[in-house]
Length: 275
Image 1 (tube, rainbow, N blue to C red):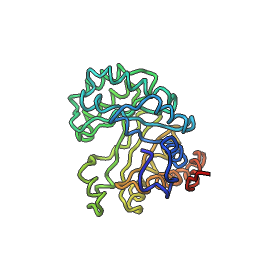
Image 2 (cartoon, helix red, strand yellow):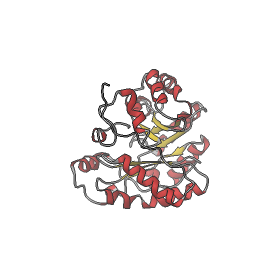
Image 3 (cartoon, rainbow, N blue to C red):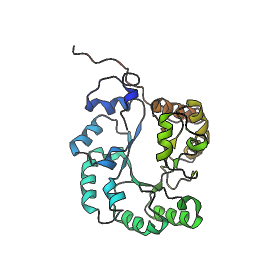
Image 4 (cartoon, rainbow, N blue to C red):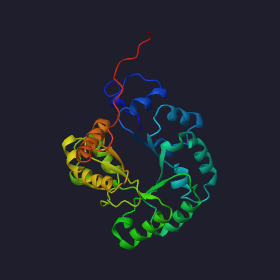
């Protein structure tokens, strides 16, 4: 996600042509979750425009299409996958990881399908899997089985940490909506590869969001000191200040690990003119 109504004219210039929106987002953060690819595979020309708007070190974590993960459940999906891989080819190394988000109905009994699917994927990409069935987190045998399959494919397990969000009852419309949609799962903080990916959901209140991510500051610092290169995504129910919060999280980590590179400077928010 690199556009949001509440960012327009406040964090990013408004209006912006489509071919400039990602460039302005990339002035705030150096990674993005590619959620739109879940709903439809973009045209190759569109993806080429994404590459032109970002530096070579920018990280895209792109979802596989839902027709692959949710409708066909990783089986008989070669056709949609060919279209998807061809479309994202212009990103080159910017395609940091391809995100296999599985539905809550995907259980430990379905892990063999995941194992076969991962074996068939091109080795030119890195893969990361997000599961939402509670058994993967609560049953040690299911945890070990999934970790073994991911390790065989050098794939990461993406935790979606909603524990801070569900700690207190919702107090806004955005929080109430998220309360009914977001998964409520135990915390997981184990990295399987040298490039772990974390998704964190805080609250609309900044203080609660910051308090909830303190454990992740410690974990990310440890990972960096171990030589890993983590990617952290910060969300709130309304996402109104998500870029600001992401930069604050980065600053907290960088205060502990000064060698960590600074984030880019945002493009100044100035109204577009005709002259």
